[in-house]
Amino acid sequence: MSQDFIPAAKPIIGAEERAAVDAVMATGMLAQGKQVADFETEFSQVLLDGRASVAVNSGTSGLHLGLLASGVGPGDEVIVPSFTFAATGNSVALTGATPVFADIELDYYTLDVTHVESLITDKTKGIMPVHLYGHPFAAEAFAAVCGKHGIDLYEDAAQAHGAAVNGQKVGTFGKFGMFSLYPTKNMTSGEGGMVSTSDPEVERKLRLLRNQGMDKQYENELVGFNNRMTDLHAAIGRVQLTKVDGWTKQRQDNAAFLTANLEGVGTPKVAAGAEHVYHQYTIRVPEGRDELHERLRSGYNIGSGVYYPVPNHRLPSFNRTEDLPNTETAAKEVLSLPVHPSLTQDDLERIVTAVNTLVKAGA
Image (cartoon, rainbow, N blue to C red; front, top):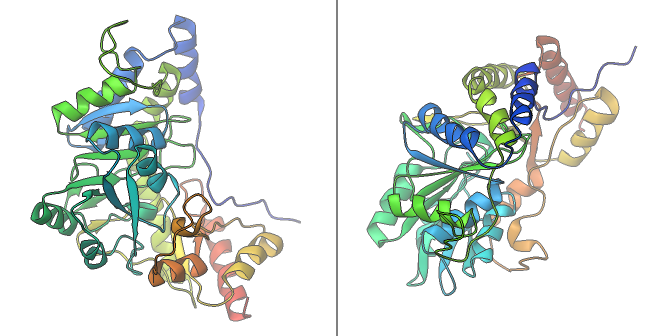
């Protein structure tokens, strides 16, 4: 008998989410309204220790608007990782500024502080590291570097809902922080993003920029966008927000089981003082990563993901020539295994058996 497929990621949408959407549909008020406002307040309370939140229609919109609201534009440089999803560098380029790609360290796949500091110039407006795979970047060290050089820290927290450094939640270190609410993230609104900030002027600009530059209808204060979140999406997000802490705990428990039982691969490390929320459970496979990826699917019906096989600086959209050796190594060796909350104990044991068997056989 064939075994059911274990997906690499699995959004959890239940009866409560469907009922919440139906309740909004029944009101006939679907665009940005009370649901969005309530979602912003609740997101701040649950994940940001009260820091203000502004809802938008995607994580990429959140990065773009956050940078614009922080004053980033033509002539500026923002230092970013190349080992991440392209939205990080794209959002900088969309402001007219230049993304400067820096290398990562290989323990946590996050930006290397020393390399970043060597790239700071008089054009550097800020640094935007990524809390990658759910592991926070060295936020305190980066805040110190930014303070030393008089530049801004921006947080790409797309994958890190609830992660923390020494008890302080991610999204509360930088001038702004952005959380994605795409379906595969640790919680979702169907599609959307949330931008956090403690700067009232940045918050106000975010609210203007997402809504055609308006605070009041037909009183456009600046040139803006239609990047609003709908009440339908916010209703889903509000339900998910009540569950995300439990899901995070399950992800952490699943990760602990995998780490204790996998053999022959590099399992994820966790920095001292860091709370990892395991958006991805990412192993290192120095030899045969692509074969392992393929054979998990073909031989064991187990999904996995390669995030990210092409460093951003080498994408055709950027086509740059930086020498980033750790980034190149990670791109060749990383493989993300299922860690989502829907996994059963049998699923976890199947994953361990499959990986250990294939690695031992030289896959």
